[in-house]
Image 1 (cartoon, rainbow, N blue to C red):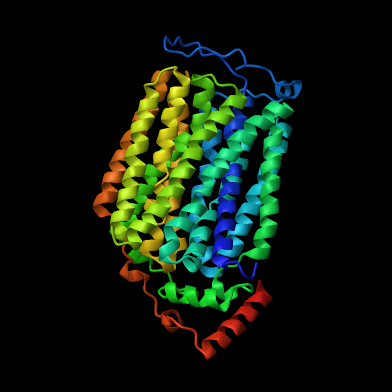
Image 2 (image 1 turned 135 degrees about the vertical axis):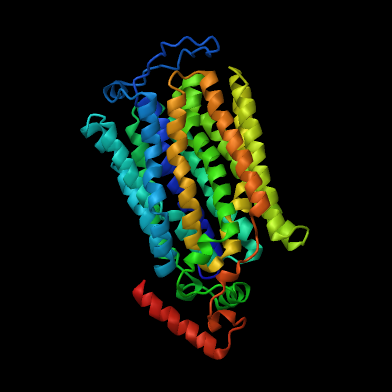
Length: 488
């Protein structure tokens, strides 16, 4: 490990953190399709798709024992309840990461969410499917995960230079798409193989606990506290991150809350999250209830859009860094360009999917294109907080992502309310709403957004401005590292 650049180790472990977090977040979305007693709508829909012979196949006696009578509105509440807690802990999580560093904030976030996910089947079965208790349980999981993104942003600001920001930032955050793919694929396969939805929660909860052990061993909050980092890498990071303080400072709340680029970023995040959470929480239900895919095929076909999104996000991250480093685009131009792609593209293809009728594989292709165009979001909006204020990246991410997460409460509930009869027409309304939110929020970001470091990011820290290590600096670094090792 000593000879591997530690910023890459942190980037890879951060990527795995996103993977684990999203498996814990979305595993319920597939599982719930086999937790509910399916009722044919009394509403006649002339455009309804034909049902496959295997669509309502009973997989085992165990499944029939653990089915619950939850209507679409109740399902919407259950699926959105995660975000009730998730939105609440962003600001506290950002403050914790800013004060104490991101290592323990991120680690405990994943560990707690994993343990509660592992216990979810026990909670559901022992309460005989009491949906209110399940809602509370998912809120707790959301509370745990709300700390994650502020902690990740804090870590990235301490470890990743501008020249690698889009690539590594995209790798870390796009881990969510790999997590969604894994969750969808494994969930459908597990339910089909074991005949019970409970296995889904055991597998992903256990994986999160294993990740936590490795995280504690190999990752640290900043280069100063890392026992494996080489002097060469430390010198490089001090040079390239000269405006970044390794110490905590008072947060300029007034400047943050009155910053036009910050609020433009918040609005852009709201637009993206509305579309993304609509897809991630409701696409499995759309494929099951409207397109009539069985649970195994649902998991497989529901994974393809996220795989394409991941590929597009990684490719766009490299292109974005190249455009900036070659001066073909300024940081501001690059952020707005890729944000626009990630807003207009998905909106157009989601609408195309809603008019595809019962052409199931063409519809999947349209959803796949929509999710692919969402990929450039990561090198557009997602890393923009690091541009604006790297010294307060965790807090800024907490504000931006926390407000955006509120859409995770509203969007699934609204979709459930508008689609009580599972008709194509009802879902088309949901997708039209999504399209206009994408469009309006992108226009605002293009007008008021920025990729320039804000003046209130500057802090008075002489050590930060040093770009080369003297003998005294090296001695300070070693003594500081030994001191932190005692406390870690």
